[in-house]
Image 1 (cartoon, rainbow, N blue to C red):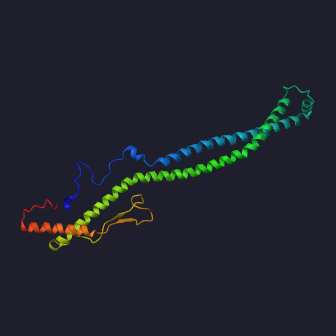
Image 2: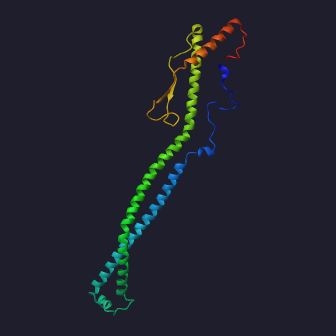
Image 3: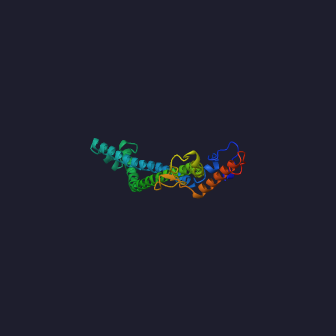
Length: 246
């Protein structure tokens, strides 16, 4: 029974885990990679829409400035220059002609900007909302990827605990044979337990916070029989061969 375990190669860690190859480390990142790409595109769209909103706002502001400058020129000379411009007598290169032309052109642009601005602002708001949602999803996927990587340790942790429990039961079997002669071997009547981690291999936050072991009666009984046999052989022969047992 005791020598039934597989022998490990020299220098290997029977409970450890070899480092994951790079290709294995990247398995399971497809959704994370997709969401990350979508978020980057959303951020680029937000930057484009913000620039668009700024441009449209600048067109409106420029139109208002040109209108104020035109009104100021009209007030300055009581409308004389404007009257000449209206009558076709003003020089095309005159200050009033330039102000009127600029005010008219910027007003047309402002009219178009007023129509386009609400749609651009709505698109910007939608893009920001989508980006916020993608950030939450990206963070959730990041946590999932990291949890899957940490789960390699969780599996090794569970294997180590299971091995400890197996050895525990074997020693319980030994204690049932030995204690009558050399005192109590089992110093405390308590089964092993270790803290649980909320990782895929070990459960979730609703699970028992401990990994708990219950003695395997079969393992205990087999161990007791083995140690009883070893004792009997040694009682008959101090040089008895126990290699098939231990």
